[in-house]
Image (cartoon, rainbow, N blue to C red; front, side, top):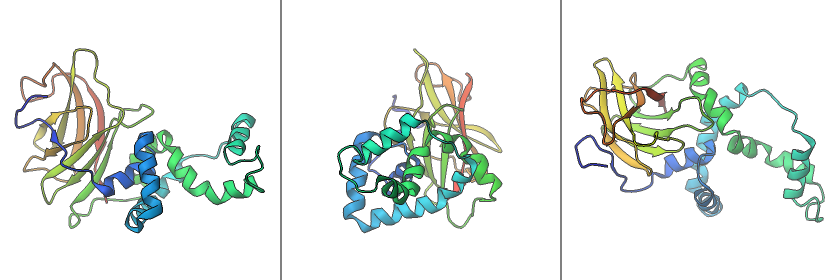
Length: 235
């Protein structure tokens, strides 16, 4: 990543609220998820943030039709809760107690694929007074490409790559697309980063990722195909 003004700068720290959102969405890697589970057992603030995101995202569950799992999946779940070793006297009851958290944490790709449309359908519109927004930037794959948290009050956004993949020998570049057209935010790297928003950025804009030559667009405008997009959702 080059050192130009449009590049993504290293994220100075992890945002606990964004981490809670990713935990609920199911996009943390195994190590991060284990650390979050430990935090939930010891930190009341962390548990409160997770509950708040569960409330915000729970309407997405309505978009997922019920599916009867294959018998092998049921058997695997019963083994996981100790049915085979006598560790749980009533594994089905245990599963029922855990089902709400389990569904939210593991729905993952299906919820994300329908997420933006469901939020629009439920009428959750940006509130100008709040200034904080979340965008799930995706292109129809199993995982979102990026999770972006925007703060219009500070003019910055936190960018966390999840499933973004650049073609060999090419770069991915993030853009804010508003009334004045696309504005470059920087190259998408492998780690979490922070970007500065254009001065004219508003919650009505769209985030997009295009495929560009190595180092980014030479013209300041997208030159390759747009592979990921996402709208801002008010927190």
